[in-house]
Image 1 (cartoon, rainbow, N blue to C red):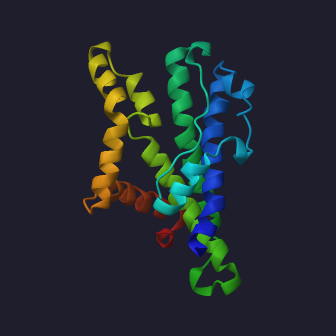
Image 2: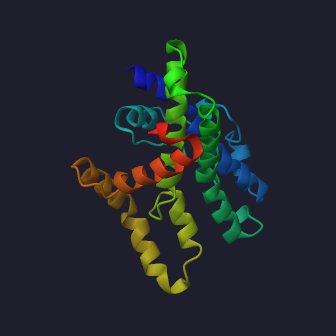
Length: 207
């Protein structure tokens, strides 16, 4: 329960900044849809899906409300889609870096009991922002990485795109299910990346 309470503000910040970044870059690329929908804000109430947040807190897998995007408003459709898709994961990467920098100011061996919850919250900030960054870059729909992949693949791979769009969500669910059975086809390598990158940001104490 304590871990969930410490994780809650971290997730609210991570998911809110992620979705806001999508909308902000889309707006800069010429699409005002997020702004007109009231989603160009850092108010978490506008971005959080309650069910997705609860599931995230309990099972470490969830979702927020996607920011509405109309790619036909972009000045350059291909660049607009790619930059908007990358913006969310990149924002989590930056947050992880910032959490890590603050974490480096603490020496765990000498930290007071009163500051231990804050220290743990910083650790969670590094870990979960990196998880959101890496997971969302997987090139399978509906994740952000698929939008990047689909806009750089040649037209001869259109059938692959259509197939992934149709079955991508089921593939993701299958991977998560298999991973929960103890076969680390997903969280195993994500965890390795988190440990390596998080270690660079915050030192070996991050995991």
